[in-house]
Length: 349
Image 1 (spheres, helix red, strand yellow):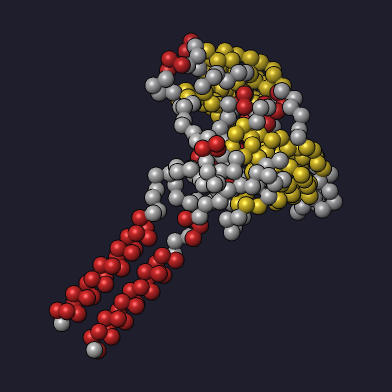
Image 2: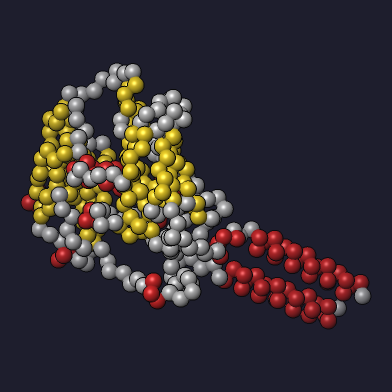
C-alpha cells in the first residue's frame, strides 16, 4: 500500500510538472482572431511633447486596405508603386515609408486627412476606414534648429498587449533634429545602383529602367540604367541646400521595388513577383480561418523607431514552417508513458 501511495504521489507530481510546462507556452500561440472590418478606427498621434512644440501639421494617406484575416491589399492610389507591405518585411517599413513619401511628393498626392497638433501636442485622426496608413509631417523650425518628422506606416487596427484588436490606435512620431549651426558642404553627390532579384525569370527583366532624381520631391534629372552602364549612375556637385531622393519613374510589371539609402548611395531592388495561390473569401465558411493562413500581429508600438525597427511586430506566433500542434500531443504521450512505466514498476515490486 505504501508503494502504491508513493507511486500515486509521483504520478501527481508528474502531472503538475507537465501542466506547469504546458502553461509556459503562450496561450495566444493557439489563438486566432479576425478583424471586424465593419468598424471604424482612429489614430491619436503625439509629437514633440518634451520639446513643447505644438501646431505641427500631419497628414495621413491610406496605403492599403486590411482584410478580416489581417492581410494588406494596396489601394488604387498606391498599387502602381509596386511596394510590398507585410509581416515578412516589417524591418523594411521605415524605408518603404520614406520611398512612398518620395512618390507622394513627386505625384502631388492629396492626403486623406490633415490635422495639426494641438496645445497638448496631440493630433487626432478620427472616423478612419481600417487599413495601413502612411503618416507624414511638416518640418518645424525652432530657433536655429529644425525638427524633421520621420515618415512611418501604421496599421488601424493593431493588436494590444492582450492580443486583442485595438481600433483606436495611439502612437508617437519620431523626428530628426537638424542643427543649422552644424557646418555642411556646399555640394553633395548621389549614386544609384540597380539590383535584380529574379533568378530563373531573367527573361522577364526589361532591357533598361528610367530612374528619377528628385529635388525636394520634384523630378530634377532622369537617367536610363541598363547593362551598358552596369545598372548604376552617379550625380556629382548637387547643391546641398536641397533634399535629394531617387525613385523609379515606372516600375516594370511583375516586379516590386524597394529603395534604401546608405551614405550617398541609393540601392534600388526590383524583385520578381512569384504568383501565389490565394483563398477567396467566398470559399470561407462560418468565419473559419483557412488552413495555411497566418494572421499578422502588431505590437502596441505601432510607430517604429530607428533603433529597433523590428519592434513593430510581436514574434510570439510561430513562424511559417513551425508546427505547434505536436506540443500537447507529445505532452500527453509523455504522461501516458509515465503511467505505463509506473504501473509496470509497481507490478515488478
